[in-house]
Length: 450
Image 1: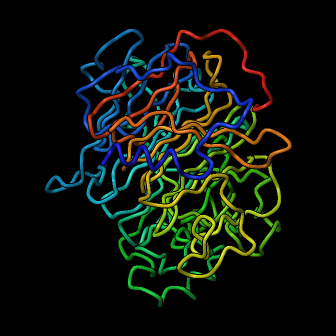
Image 2 (image 1 turned 90 degrees about the horizontal axis):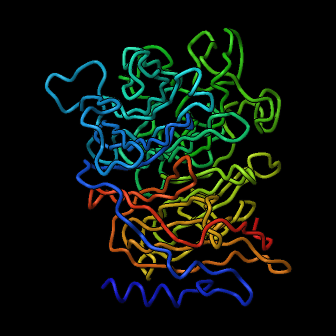
């Protein structure tokens, strides 16, 4: 079946390399960096000069891999208990269904302020985005007593959490959210821009109304309108109490974050009443994404429903249409609730279950030292394990080009980068992290793809 997947993938439209395009070095390989992990889902670095890798585990543990080590430190960076304990502790991660510790991002000034941010699902099935500080006495241990929620989002169902978070080169925190819904987006979260639309959609399903257990600080029922969005916030600022259009604020309007003035719906921008936190909308389940620091391009792998998987690109300084389609549209085809008219198409859609898989993992632009890879977006599919390279159009063409590189037979859930530019991928099925090495380093890749 793997062989058939590989052969079918090679025949898919756009899977060949055009004449004159750069190809990967012949010695590019995958080398195991560490094994014996527990449900790893992400690898990140702190940007503090330590060259450590932080490996995020779905079950609540983050491990530290020091430079040159073949095993993680015995003491984790932190380990949040699971909510399945009876009785559950106050701070815990729910790990059933599609829940867990979803992602982690270090503050751009982590070296000086010690802050990092995490996304986890709490005991009530809701998303919590929290700021945590590293221990003041041990740089390899986090101080969980400093954990402070900055945003909470009410979910109605147990799937499509999104999960990732990352800082852009603009210093703002980007958070892609899934529709938090059942198949087909019955609550229409994909096209819900304002809290007023929540009340209109609530009768569609028992999963749509606000959760009575969603209580406490930052428990805003309007936060359901942030599902199916890419959220952009300024974690270095705050919002004072008063009237505003925030959907994740406290009841008095205050929030432990500020809204970048360039957000498309901030204040009186865009649609009246739309959540100020929204950067774009129409996403089904963008489980993994990245922001290319050199171009400001965001690459999102949006997991499909019935017909297509998709990789979409969006510039963080871009203006104009912010609707990426779901659930009116799925990829380039009509979705369960409409059609693609007026939405932004993906740069690379592919049909589900016809060779490349059915759960996209993407994507991460390579900016390291290997000469043939700079500017290429690496991506894979969780169900197929095939790693592919996505390239920008070479003018005058306007078509992105996809090249199948290797069928790994791994269950790949994310890509990440070390401080030295090395690229890694995470295999949750084998509980391993892999690195992409090549001897072809040191030559600047400058053929127009950047």
